[in-house]
Image (cartoon, one colour):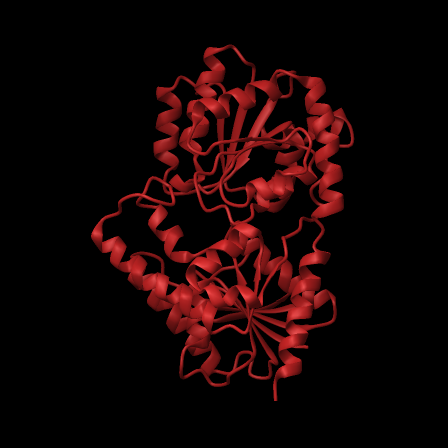
Length: 405
């Protein structure tokens, strides 16, 4: 089958859970024999093309800056690429991420194709969360509410105009029902997976030591706690740092490594100093793929302090595959992922004290960590392969193309 996948961004040009899913799915479908073209954005000034892992990747230029400037550049980039014939022989349109997806299906596109939409989150709620301290409710300034109203219409338009929808969780299905109730009947739930070969526990103490050495992390008996997050308010990193201050006050031994970049980095570093955590906390910035694998192998505990809108949580799946004990907030779909994982800890979102108590329990108990590590890896091997997700996409694609004239 010839598939044209359209996204706003994809890994490795942009680091994020949805962006990684976009790339992994395109590559997975190509490995199954499909002819896949991925149309995605990048920060360069011209259209570019390359072959990557069996996928024909076409990148259109995107301009960062004010939201309206960014939105216009995505729209024009997608529309121009389609007008120039990108994906002109495709049999199926696989849509990712609302901004690019709406541009690909709005009236005036060269050819109407059957539409399969991979839903990750309502974009209007993610946008509003930036102005609500990362939460899914609260007051936002009126200009942002106006923009969010337009984005909500785009979210709904995309859902209602797609013949098949694939969501990553029951939580995402409930979001779809809130936006467009009738679309739930044509939505398939298919959790994402994880690369079990790339993300795995260290084979022995030497492999953990080498992983730490490559990242410049101390190698001693103090357990490493890690998180991998965009540094924005929705990710709850302020709550994690406050929880760590409580751990330090109670003399619980730990070190924390935070991987990722974002608009709050300077603010978070300043908070670290104010809390007296400079000796325990390391900001690693954005890590390359091989460094990210090392980070998981270097640690013992993974924290996911999200405040809202966790549609799936790719990093949670990666942590489980790496055999880490996961301590997370009950935000979005995280509870679904961790429901059957022995030793995983789930606490209310936005509550640093409850988060600190859960972290103290696992950081202070080496035997419990070892048992939970084995359980985490076993769960990933049984429940988090990519085959289930790719199978669901293929079935939806075949239903669509078989109905096409």
